[in-house]
Image (cartoon, rainbow, N blue to C red; front, side, top):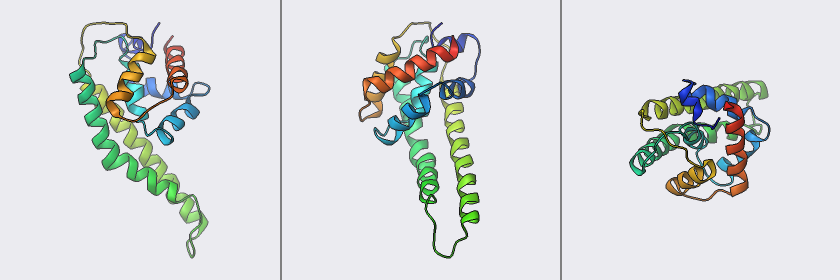
Amino acid sequence: MGAGAALERHVSLWDFAVATYRRPGVEEACLALQDDHRQCVPLLLWRLWVLDRVIDATDLRRAVDVARKWETAVVAPLRSVRRGLRESFPAVADDARLALREKLKAAELLAERVLLESLERLTIAGGSAHADAIAALAELVDAWGGDAPAPLLARLAAAAASATG
């Protein structure tokens, strides 16, 4: 069963994303795609979730626009502040700094969940299709901008397929 089969079984995009992210090697691949290649991981996971749906250029552009706006306004700033709290600050207690960092981590995860839920609502029921996962991800990377190595996309695609099948 392909990654997009999640829709047929009415698995939410959030549940699909969590199950996929837990697969071996996926966290590392996602972090590399995010940090080294400036890709939007929730958007990549959305594309795998809708793999068995017809996604035309308009659908793809709409999803990219929603993700880019949310990523820029909310997710990236939260991530930046959270990462800035890795190191100690003079006169700031480490336990207070780390507690704040954990709250920001939870807020960042919630922001990513809001994005996934928004993308899920954006996805209308359409005709069924069977897109090649790596090609679909590559098309999305082109629409988002930047680059992403094929081996990372293949790892993510394989994990998504095994998470649903």
